[in-house]
Length: 149
Image 1: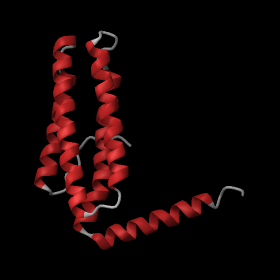
Image 2: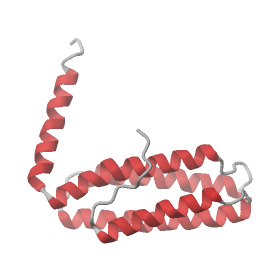
Image 3: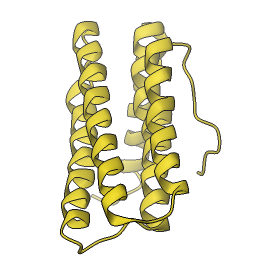
Image 4: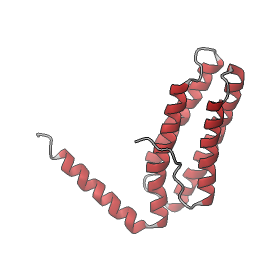
């Protein structure tokens, strides 16, 4: 599912940080490809993303969010991917291309829509979050029941 509009939650700080990250990636994508400039901007994005993830995970910990470990794992994986890419760009073994920008944008939009959306729901309406989790467990059980023993 492709998204063209960044989902906002009405949580000013989170929405601002998400807009800033998406804007930074779109700014980098719009510029001409030049390894030195790409590397500087990519490192800035990695740094901003790291700060955002730390802030978000701190909010989750404060809220007692039970899916913090799963959320952290997704953050860690994406940050590691970007750090590895920055190393390859620095060594001249990789350049930033359309596929990178599409994958990065798709990940951010998916992560915000699904994982961040779940956290915001947990903070704003715990009963709705609990019901959603129960429904997901039923759907999973029904899906697993379709497989032979």
